[in-house]
Each structure stands twice: as C-alpha cells, then as structure tokens.
Image (tube, rainbow, N blue to C red; front, side, top):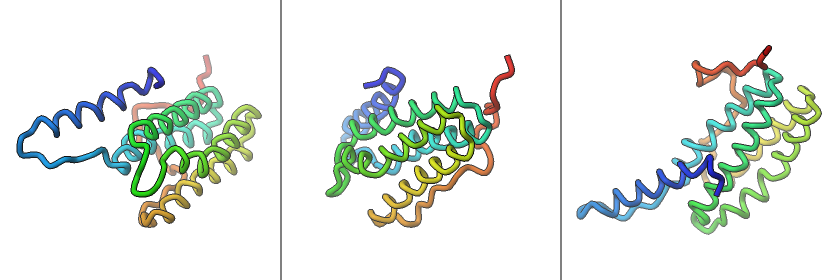
Length: 155
C-alpha cells in the first residue's frame, strides 16, 4: 500500500474496530460511496483545478495521488455487490487516467481538458451502471479548497 494512503486504511480499520467493539452495534462494512466521497472525489477535484491552472507539476502529483487512492479503495473494498472493484476501476478509469497523464506530460491544456472530461465521464458511466445515476460528477467550477492556491508557483 502506498505510504501516503496508509491513513485511508487506518481510518477504515479504526472505524471497523469501533463498530465491532460496540456490543449493540450492527455489523457495518465500509461504504463504497463514503470512500469515494472522502478520498477519491477530492483528488479528482484537485487534479481538475491544477490542470485548469496549467500547474503541470501539481497536476502530475494529484494524478499519482488519484491513482494510488483508487488502488487503496480497491484494496479496502475489493467487492461491491457483484462488482469487482479492481476490475471496474481497470475497465473504466485506466485509459482516461493514462490520457490525463499524457496531457500533463505534453503540458497541453486542450488535451488535458479533453482527457479530464473523459475521466469525469467514465465516473458517471460507472454510477449509471450501478443504479447511482443521481451521482453526477463534473469538472470543478470553483475550488472547495479555499486555503490552497492551484496556480503554478512563480519561484
């Protein structure tokens, strides 16, 4: 597991232990939606904001973090309903993530915008295919991180 994402596993383990430790608690497994909202969605947002600001070094960092987070989610919850999470991620986001990577390496805003749009669309295809069409992901229009500057550093 990636060292930077060990905290995801730690949170999931602590939550499971807390639930298991309560005599009156019902058995509760990690919810895929909670993992996606808490860990994947912020990385998606930050990647989009970095790319829109042409901050290629930070976009590359967030892309690496997003990939690692997807891997961690797949490790924490390998199955959802009848769905293999690793297989789902491989079939839906692998190529869009590679396209985003190529755009970042080329430092091409137009290519990034198209690739990020493909990545975002792949999220929505997955949501619709698993009866979660109400969850619609879009490119960020404003930052939900007011304490972070996504512009390229001028140092």
